[in-house]
Image (cartoon, rainbow over all chains, first blue to last red; front, side):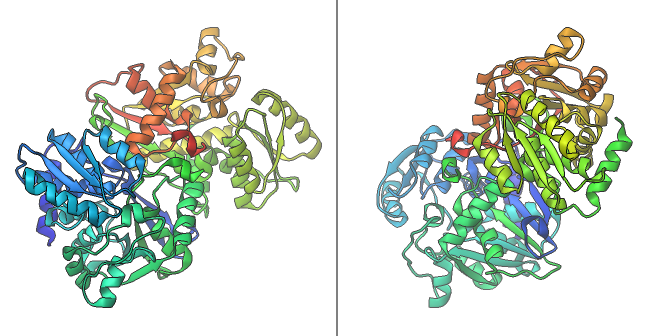
Length: 312
Length: 312
């Protein structure tokens, strides 16, 4: 993964998909505005992306970079990647099948159907839905979009980092939530050693942390408040390779801190985001990550696929 | 009201209140991203302001421009102006009393108390709460902040327009919701004839529209989905004067269109906003306001003081 692949993805997006894919706002605030002792906190408001999260970037790039058979596209996804695939397929006018585990939220399933996708609910966790999806793909020959472990998907996610730099220059650090690792892989591939890329995971869904401990990707048990979107069982092979080189810290956060940060973002900032999008603020508020006084920290607010009633 | 008063307000904000008052994002989108046939739609995301709406600008300017007695500040407000006054008083470390009518939401009352304000719930509508507030102010001598009809409050609101122009240049048109008129007065005072300023009101709370019809400010009955924040009974004297000169159209919107636009903003854009903040999109979606094909339309997303469960 390199800058050329990310540039190519950004170029594809500029060729007529400006109404589909959105250039999301980068909001720079003094650290004090969030009660954090650092110079600046940048919020990349990627929850406003089409489909409510960053995944539209990777999926649209995957679809645009390949020719799509009549059987369309197929994906297994805990939710957001499926929504992004369905939205991209709709924009391109191709068929779409989405396999989701039973743990995925009814709200996300309804959203998928609304986008014209055929939804297959199967398996207790993501890995089981994936297995069924792969079986089906063999039958139909549809283009498989993987939620995080394909080069085009990672390069698409990398356009988010490219956009941050275009909009605001280079931050000192970027705090990114990790599930399967597609987002952090794209971001780390873009910034390399030019910014400190910090991986954040729930204690109850520690794919990268566990891989570091074991020296290789391993399966982990996943649960907790963010399992719906960070519930991959294992870090992706592409993410693992990039993370070894270009991701510095790998921090774990308790569910209570994630939930507190999520509620704080709503109450104090009116940002309605899903738990997975609150890990960056949780890391700052708990002191799990302590920026320098002059540091410019960028938080990637990665998604807002939630039932808003959970913020009441 | 002129540019100098708005510049002075902006200068006050820059003197050490950057952590209190936020520079909110301006998000430029192609019209097609919202399904609107015009070149660009700009969203000024002022719902992310401290207190969840634009009113913090006016209130902070009112407090900073005057010396505050030991009895503190006092305000009558349907909700958002009260929240803004309480937040500004808290930031400056002064006492605050807020008079709200019984129609104001329990959520806003709770928020006021959380900000350290003393809340007095009295009167069925705003005008009655105001009367009680003025009586009390005579006793205590506290600095009165009016929800919309004071020069410092209007100038503070005007900084929002100044910020739009700093961030994105000059839009062709600006669509603004009107209650008492403080926001549109500040915006029209800033842009003057340099942009087309369009006033939007619910059919059920038509203060400016009724004043235009009568040739002078008149009392109107207010109800409907946006009454909680646009429920002023009469357009302010300052707003009336400015609007006669610098506000072009005055359009009315049905509640159903406002509510549809509010839900659309959440479902399609993940923007959680109160009904009053959805009038701009409602005007575009219903065709009540039809921009030219090459037009750059700016919508002021003015507040997000809502119970998120109402978006479920």
